[in-house]
Length: 270
Image (cartoon, rainbow, N blue to C red):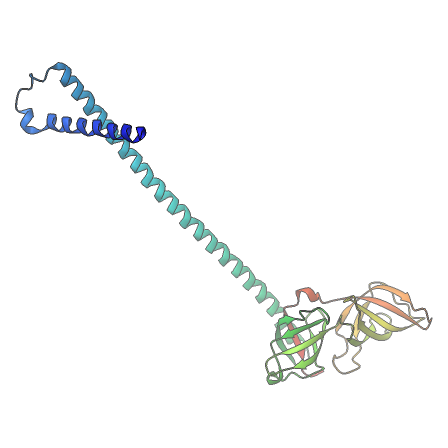
């Protein structure tokens, strides 16, 4: 209550001072002599006038500063939004450039290859990770059939195991149910590249006397129908002998990075 009364009192004094100044400055009063007011009252009114003018000037300055602050804040928000839009646009253009580069590689490979190829985009993966498979956006109506080979310009991806009119399921080279007839480029030894339970690949049935070395290149041999001869499968990363003593086994590092697979080529005429 005391604070409210004090506040009201201050406002009352201020209003009375303003009224007094207005009366003092009114044209009718200025034409009359006001010596009857006396010097003390005149001095008081002058000081009140100065105070009121200073007060109103200060309030005006504060208001102008507030308006400027509001404008600055709005301008900052606008600039932040524009910056975010430019960053998003830059990311979109970068992604567009990367996609164009990948598609250009597919086109270049198709032009130098003697194979009849159909380009497709990876649109899904096996959510359970039980099988190493991907879905592509081409199917029966595009001429795709089960057992057709799937590749990239880098190397062998896998083969189609299921088709629908608009999509196909591809079994990857690294799946444990996958197998591709292969040969060692340097020694010409043949074998079978299979996937493993760990999602890797190995080449089996290499002769015990074969001089297979680490970093040897492994290619498709052209047998079994899905792939023509000479396509890149990967490189030997390790060689070891089986316990039965009849064959060697080569661990294979696939040429394709299956974690970054986005576009593929389907072989229509192996």
